[in-house]
Image 1 (tube, rainbow, N blue to C red):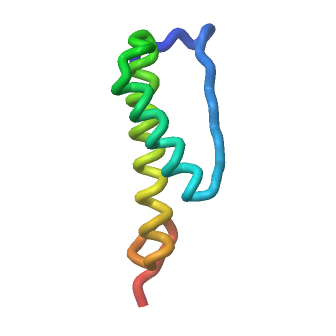
Image 2: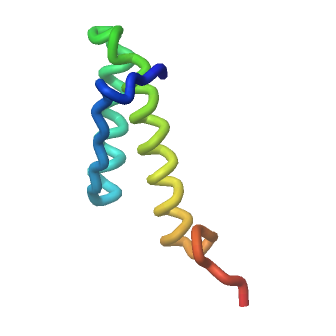
Length: 72
């Protein structure tokens, strides 16, 4: 996605895992609908960010890795 630093909006949102999954499903539905073609790349990026974040938290909860973990 091409960005103009003077005209770029940034959004950092935190939420519980269940709401993150729900938001991911909603964004996927919006993207698939094709109702907002100019936002397709934004929807794609949101899906990727949510997916990565959910995967990271799942790994943290299972003890399978993540930043700052040391093996004993």
